[in-house]
Length: 130
Image 1 (tube, one colour):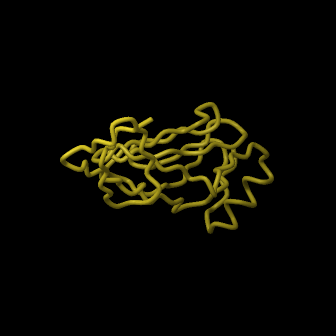
Image 2 (spheres, helix red, strand yellow):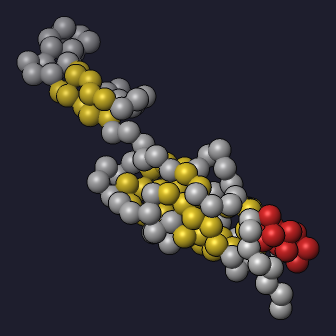
């Protein structure tokens, strides 16, 4: 079928051989597989509505949220909680077009005041009331 699937970063060369005639291409084709971007959550994985956390990298690509009703993200990696729930985030590298997802981590957005106050204190922040 001629379909190539990259498994790991690197280069591989391919030669085409016709199944009926046995004739092969004269020049091999080299395919480069680029690595996925390395992404991480630098801040908390649990935030309150209206609060933020940070993703890395902060340059060189585009961030997207799979659930913008729960949390939005800027291209600099700043996530803002919008509504209670969870969201995953994807980064697309501008140079390679490769995409990485924060598969291992979701960011959870809380709505309950009690949980938000405890979370703020746990992260060394002064609780914000009203």
